[in-house]
Length: 84
Image 1 (cartoon, rainbow, N blue to C red):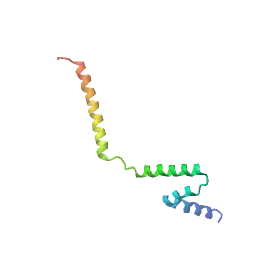
Image 2: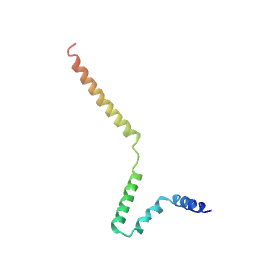
Image 3: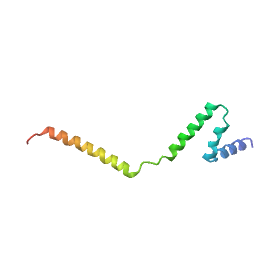
Image 4: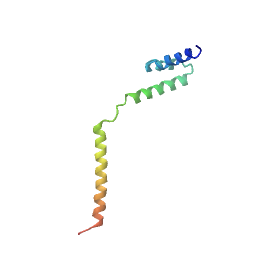
């Protein structure tokens, strides 16, 4: 019975939604720690809201990299044979 109670308490705390956990900063008494907590939460929120890179932007980056590599290969080929 002694193990069931702490285990159930852990399960309850892990099931608390993220917005409810964000409210814990207001209970921190020290002002500097409380502000640091708010800044950390804000950074986490921004990271969650940041959209993943789209397929088009990845394709564009890949094409630009391929064109750059092709240009390097063409330059090296031009240096090998001049006027053949």
